[in-house]
Amino acid sequence: MISYSQAVVIGLLQGVTELFPVSSLGHSVLLPALLGWNDVLRDQSAQESPYLAFLVGLHVATALALLVFFRADWARILRGLRRSAARRRVETADERLGWLLLAGTIPAGLVGLAFEHTLRTLFAKPLAAAVFLTANGAILLAGERLRRRADARGPRPGTPAGRGDRTGATAGAPSRTAPPRPAATGVRRLASLTLGEAVQIGSAQILAFFAGISRSGVTMVAGLLRGLDHEDAARFSFLLATPIILAAGVYKLPDLLGPNGDGVRGQVLLGSLAAGVAAYLSVRFLTRWFTTRTLTPFAVYCLVVGIACIARFA
Image 1 (cartoon, rainbow, N blue to C red):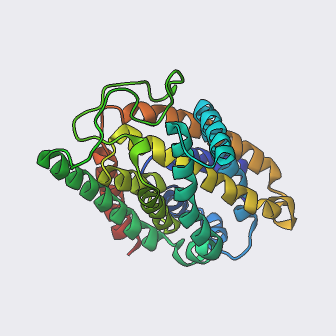
Image 2 (image 1 turned 90 degrees about the vertical axis):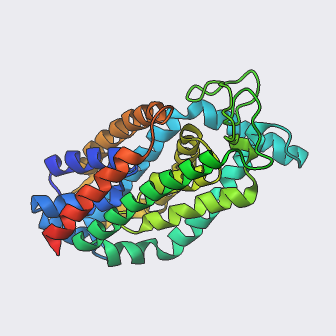
């Protein structure tokens, strides 16, 4: 049975690492192993356990924190989708962004429904998580290197580089997290992505079902390789993650409300509160970080911790 102190620690860990590009699932395996929380580690890879019911609350809390932070964005996006569906055509950047998010969410949603449980129980082991965390660091570094090479070659043909908000906000309704700014040469506008490119970026989330691979990290890399800057790649990644995380929590809500939730609902409440606060502060920090900085520090962290944990658990 998970204790209240463990619930707070794991809740904080979930809220931070779900959004930082360092893998929440990987850390939720490695930290209990390092701290000797063998019961938690065993329950995480079990077919059914109270710990899995506990995770439901953490995922819902994380998704709600994202919804609160991006509430203005989601309000515009949902209004845009409604208008676009009624007219049967796309006329504004917000409408287009809504369809991009919808298309990008489908691949990970389908794979999650079919294989999430199997992949979690199979790879929720300390050594496997350490290997995948190291791989995550390599992916982040490779993404940054390839992006720099692309920048050195100059703008790709047909790259939009006009002035104004490059993230897809409509005129007169600037995003609170992405104010209008001049577009740098060779940097694409978020709303200029095609549906196919959105599916490609969203498909990167599938890798996050392996403990140690970061959802936000791999989707950001996919966005960077399609020409987005770090700020827009991060924003698209967070918006893409919100429905997936929320759906995962709601889908497994019967685990929390059923017998598996007996005896842990107090821990769920406390852990979820910690996760929600940590997630909100994390996304607030990261949206500012990626206005001027890169994925490189997170890549180095993953490589160092991953290699150290491989040595520890091999």
